[in-house]
Picture 1: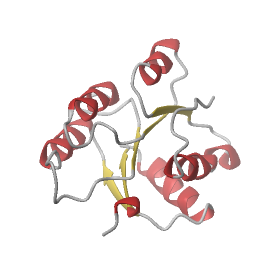
Picture 2: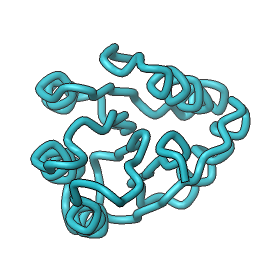
Picture 3: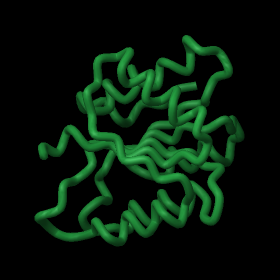
Length: 143
């Protein structure tokens, strides 16, 4: 499997998972999507994939902050502490628009912040953001 084909989505809301999958299709992104539905599973996945070589590296991670068991902030911290995965681009995709949560994005490299929208067309833009990240534009910040 090539590196660019794997994206990890950490999201506990099945409706949001469905919409993210729809957004990827809408933007023509044919990716292997690994869905983890809580923060503990995400941290376990990071630990299991923190090998120097031989394990497929994700091209990106889409991370909700409000997760059961462990927070998205904890997941991001573990990812950035990982030897093998620390440079993985992350899109924090959350309904929170708090300054503190936005500052979390700014405190880590290769991290973008995108607020989930209740508007379908705006929600679908996560596919465009991911497409941009995969093309190397992973430091900008989105409202």
